[in-house]
Length: 209
Image (cartoon, rainbow, N blue to C red; front, side, top):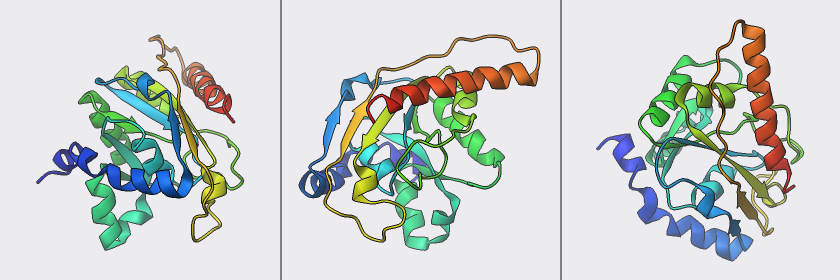
């Protein structure tokens, strides 16, 4: 059975983590209707906790693929679990062409892709400097962007804590954004445009923090 098939059928299992977050973190979701029902879309949350991929995914009915830290795939049981839920590996220290190709493939096939513009998790719960990968991938695939703001997950489970704490978590799904198509005459102009797009996404995310 293929990973893609499994990733498209995890809706049945969504109630398990949803029940946990409802009871332990009193989770609330706002703007779920802003996520398109079909077509290529990048779900772009701030990254503040171990919880982030799961908490964003369970708030909407649409299944998605997402990037996960490549070291997690070296743990046999965890490797199977995260692949089941649509994950593929990404390196945090160097560019990995296969990750880029997998992201393009997911969006080209009309899927939803979760991508954290900041890359790794924040060390203090605040938004940190973002990479240009989000804008580059969206520009290449004509996908929409849905910025997502996660509030409270850092207090619930920051990266320096081994276990979570019972803090309330709220997730906001903002209205979709699109970026215009244009021609670039040099790398500098292109990167300036990508940086502008990235900053716009992060401003929306930051509006609820």
